[in-house]
Length: 280
Image 1 (cartoon, rainbow, N blue to C red):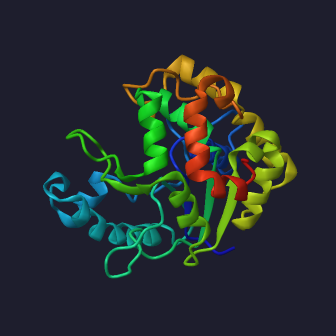
Image 2 (cartoon, one colour):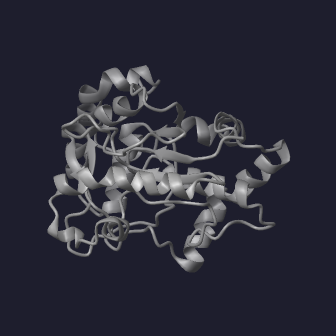
């Protein structure tokens, strides 16, 4: 089996964390579920300030976002060095963008990528709870795009990352040709977790029996994750969040939570890509 870095990419609040938990339960093989605050999945960061500062020996808050982006390809080289003997999984919310000289911001391509996408109307609802921001603000972000996400506040642990609007993000990953990518809809993963997850695992060339897949799916069940978060909290939940990180995970919850003008605005802005992936 060929090993190397694997990108797990998504627009925020599209199921990336759940995918990583599924993989950790599959690959780490505990009798019980993986601890959501201490996943044993081999990971690497392309966005962490400590990693940037280790490579550059420069306080990353002294750098502009553009300067940080020029340094990020070096982090991918570190990931390749880490992955000599085993796969290293890298969570990303970046759109697939390039530096002015044509170099991908993410640097040398991973050996493979899984891109998980979700109905942008459900993304809007989930992201509003996650950030504590008004739904109108989130809908505007999804429609108009944000040049970069994160990295603004002095305490932020991540450097800014290019995001784009929802359609731009989806197309940046699904049309790039630098790395083979498996596209996975969150809705399909919820409807047939074992089947969809199994196909993603096969795409990555990972060995797994049907029994191992079934165990991982059971251990990453939403009810299990919610109980863990209730008992111990979850480190990825933001202080400003107005709901648990594993709030509901529903498909189509936007119908009750999103005002008509907001859903209509998202559909008007992203109808072409939504239709392409079965959301309209």
